[in-house]
Amino acid sequence: MLFGQSIFQSVLERLKAEDVTAEDEAESPAAHRVSGLGTGLAFDVMQGVSAASQRVGEAYFDNLDLEAAAGLMEKPEPVPDPEPVMPEHLTRTTPQEVAAELAISATDTPLTLGEKRRAFARANHPDGVAVPFRDNATKRMMLANRLIDEALRRLR
Image (cartoon, rainbow, N blue to C red; front, side, top):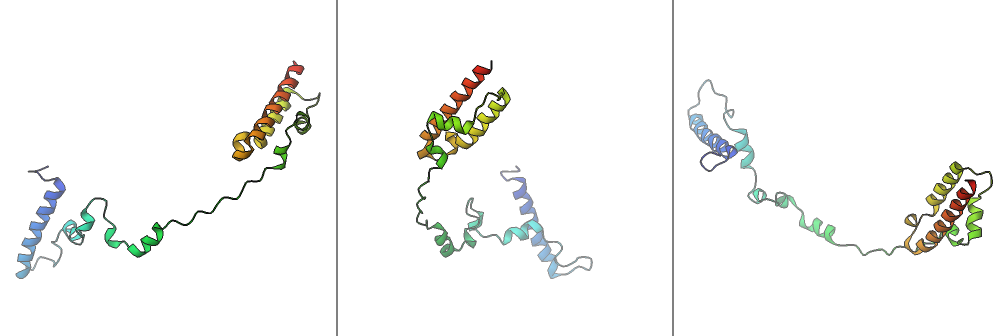
């Protein structure tokens, strides 16, 4: 900063001073000067900026269509979400029904039992269903995990 001004401000002041001297010279045109070439670009650009847009956070208020913005500001009435419907498989919460879905057999290996556990969890995990149905999903997952754990113990 030079004398309380930033470098940018000092450059603008210098360009403004050059522009004033260029206007004085324009009154008596010189043969080697091109008209309009001596003006500073940054000064010309800043001259068209409105005072309102120089305030921080208000740069686009001059161009804002308030009537159109008022339409955007109105909040539409919320549409109620439809009641979720429980998937049919979540209604089956007895150990026999879950065992029938898992279809655990004597030929299953630890690898196939792990695959069955993951596939069952993808379809029935409580985090993947709507909130009202999480209790049923939790029961089904607990039963499936217990059945698969028992089958793994028998294999050992």
